[in-house]
Image (cartoon, rainbow, N blue to C red; front, side):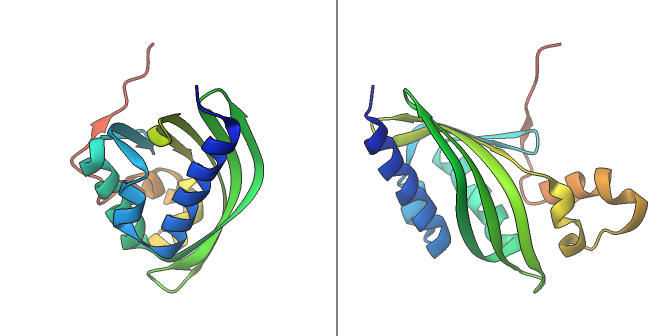
Length: 153
């Protein structure tokens, strides 16, 4: 098991790389057999990380993270954080997110992101009553093809 300080340093490096928009540096934070989960989608390996990053930076020009709550338990890093930035449309993004990361040898093996896609709806051109379902469909654009996460019934 890794030390809490080692995991916190690795998580900080990932945040700094994302804020800098340095895709290669971000990918280097992940193990080759990693997975990224968001919006009911699972992306695997370094190719999956790159698809996730392509999706992020297709919608967002600049990101800033503001940690709110951080917990480390064993190899698991859990964080609630604020995200602010500028969307590709020029709109300002202000949103609350949460993430669960699992580490092995200071590399991310699993990243699960939780956020409300409705916060992105105006930037995606969705307004009115269709915001909920349409926001999820539109937010997933760029992640295709993907394997939906299958939850036990």
